[in-house]
Amino acid sequence: MDQQNQAVFEDMYKLFLQEFGKGRKMVLSTSLQDHVTSKMMSIVQREGLFYFQTDREMRKYGQLSGNPRVALCIENIQIEGLCRETGCPLEDAEFCRLYEECFPSSFQRYSALDAERLFAVTPLRVERWLYLDGKPYLEEMDVERRRYARKEYVCITGKV
Image (cartoon, rainbow, N blue to C red; front, side, top):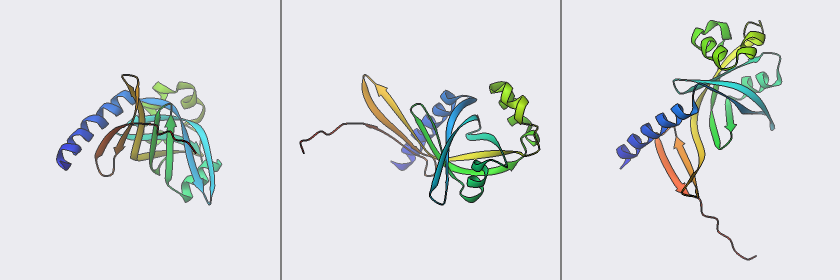
């Protein structure tokens, strides 16, 4: 059963990444010492990793330096992962190509700045709400364990 679920995971995760595409604007949530912040970021996806850039002087940079656990969110998708700094944006030609293609004005304004740094998020868990035949489902992809689940959401109502 576990091998079968891993095969299902691989197929569904590959489909998710294809549907996600090259880039999207997403909310990035970070925290440090019980202070949580969220900021809209321009994100590009390459080979299952999610990349963004930010300035070393930003509060977000300090949070990322102290706590690599992050969440990315857009519409019906939430991605929890581990974030790591990879260098300067211009040092990664493929990131630059994708970022300029998806977010040309941000690329032109910020990517060459001295204080700008590139980060990669390795997803650990992906959750997505789906609506099939008018019914809500929660799709869960445990990237660490390579497991997939889709559960119909049933609201249990009761009297208090």
